[in-house]
Image 1 (spheres, rainbow, N blue to C red):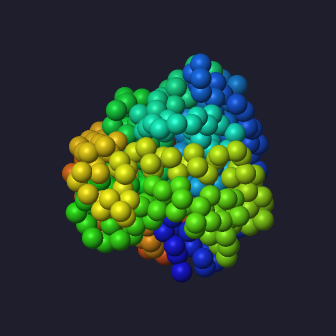
Image 2: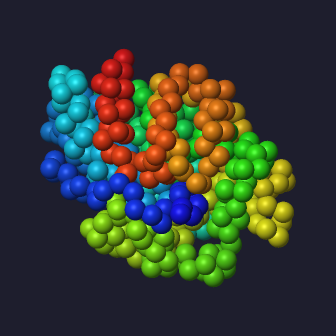
Image 3: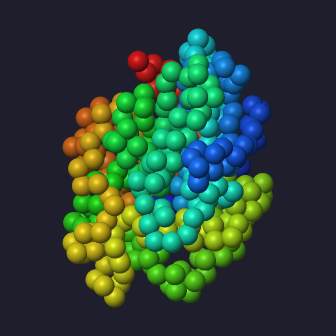
Length: 339
């Protein structure tokens, strides 16, 4: 059984295998992206002025950079074989509010415009440190998806390619929450997330409550559990992640207010007509219980003309964790062949 939580489907059955520890060295560093913002960033791959391409991996809720570790070796090994003339630098930030990164408080502190600005600033800093980097690729999952979609829509010239894993396009998701009964049903948890009191009553304001939702997933091994429990135990970390919903999806989407209404969406920060010109690959686990999967994919061509979609019928929302090889096999040709 899978339970929808956030832009996630937290599956309560075993799937996949334990996440591997990468053979490539992974280095964590704190990067000051602006006077007020610092991000905790894991990096791997080419360095010391040898990187030709940057690949930025964006996690979702309730995740962290650590959850990308299964794709590090497959992407680096695969690219060495497929395009040996290129050298890839992988960067996996803990985004605003997560783990050891900058965690502001107050309404609006997690507005999507600020989340996108964080990534623009991070790309700028990383390229300044490695002037050899000529191309930037973004790979994003879950809530990292809306950030990446918006980044590509607003700052398209920064990116060479965009890859999305089970992360809804903001304009598509907004429309479906207003019009699609199946998506509204699957997203009913968002009405809970809007209320700190209901979150606490469900036990989801504590690390132990979030942790229980992953019990039984084969990829969620003891090493992963320890890393995630450490992240969730940071002061106000879980609430910060929930603020991504409260600040962006709709203003006051609660059961009492009638749920996903047109009036509630007057305060939404999800763009209504976000067009993406960047070359885009969408990888989608079709067993995801958080989305009306078919409709989220069917509406994409309206906003994303340069689009390729690859479906993974047996994988859930946690595609990169369950099928790191499949994800890497799809990503590597795209980042190798981009013009």
